[in-house]
Length: 195
Image (tube, rainbow, N blue to C red; front, side):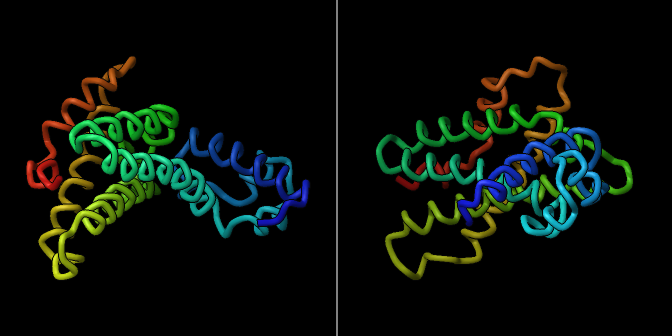
């Protein structure tokens, strides 16, 4: 990444613009021209940063989710796993609440054009976090990447996204403690008993 002040300014403007546009409609329906206009930049400048509004939004949300993943993996090393997992759920729910409207549009919309891009991104990220955790925790190389473990990670990840969607459907203000308790009660003991 360049340290050119113009590039940095454009990147920050695009981040805010793509979040603003994603708060109004599914990101799949957003155009480059729309996001560029919102950011106050040209389409050519947009393409210096991303190929599409969808790619740009996913990149910025993933950067935040990477911090959640790091915290989970670090916490799993230094505290009881159940406590680290609960803390991680809190951070995940804070992220979702911070982008409440964007996630609601994606996870709850039934209209054409909503391909649930963010639901898939969120599930993939959770699944990747669990697989990374399991790899770090595996006693032997033979356990690494096994189908049952990958299936268990997918089960928790996609179930978590479904639960988060139901939470987002509930009336505001939504209590993250309720969501965390529901998520934690749904985690199979197989995961929580690993350490």
